[in-house]
Length: 492
Image (cartoon, rainbow, N blue to C red; front, side, top):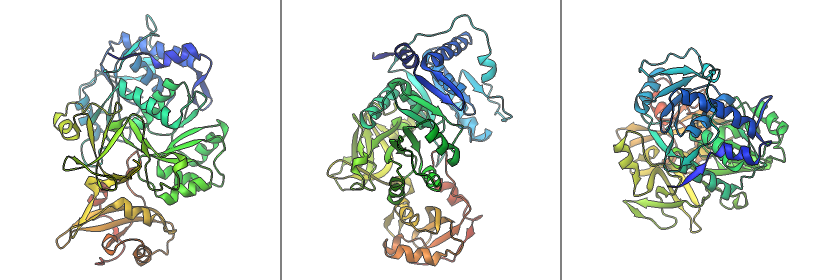
């Protein structure tokens, strides 16, 4: 059995005065954070929380939430972060599936579903008395560390089983490929209930770097924090990059890396960011891989524009079709293998059997590897549109449309059609009120085959996305009757 000392306590012993966590004007060294976590772990132990007990929590962003995550880790308990954007009815099946020993909440007026589980307010928990703080612990790599529920873009979320070893190897792979150093300062603006937000916390304590936690993304405040706190690392989704580029200022020189994930980004957006000094690097990963497992090094841009990068060590990537590997350049489903890959879905053996095969994860994404092993992700397998027997990938059409100066945001999706099987529809957020569908069709006519050009256009105020920035295409399909049709159908 592979074991490790508690990551936070180890850093507190060797670098006690180094800054570990910053939240506004509040600051903790590793020694100070370790002491607060030890106290909270002791209180939780008095509440009966121990090895592999599942503890769910729905909390506003705060340093106390960070402390709770580290305290549960020290106890060997299982973190179950709950998406704060979900409604009670959406949260109920998740709670029933996880069946936590305890739910920690923030005392807001959220209407909790009646699941019969014990709940406590975090503030009251932290004010409790305890017999003994818990400083020391041994982490077992095989133990379950977190149940992270997928964003559920097409159905009920599944609880991804992230182990302690998954977190460790995710941190090691990232460090080997991105060079995470103790002096790095990572600005945390990602959701804490998603795997990307969790891995920032644990990668930082494993490598001994500083987390600067923001209340959330606000382009002006985030930019000010980049400068004031001399941020060197930043994790973003494409929408955040768009917003930062709307500001007048260029990237500060100490920002050495902006990791781009969550959703595909047009090469034109990345190029604009580079011109403004933002060293944006595309990545690829998902909840089931404990965050990113593929990274495009800055030196490969723009030669590899459109690529997500080369697999991080020690990850294997294959392109498969009909359970057979395909050669370089051939498009198929992306399969990945490595010690970062989750062990399955909690209490869902059927989904586990469908997705996990002999150590390989079937990602459900379509892509290809070039002759040098660089991965190009085309789209989600389930999002592919088949029109008259031709395969159309929404992300390809979107990447062209966002290059139009009159388009602010866009989403392409398929709608059922008796004649063609499916038609290509597009929802557009315009930045130029004078823009017309004809303008967009003309713009695409020199860039795409005619069958890929949308024939149905909707003008919308916003594109529905989940907290990771991914387009909710199923939501768009369901809402077409309520959306304003911008034009009549055009058979192209």
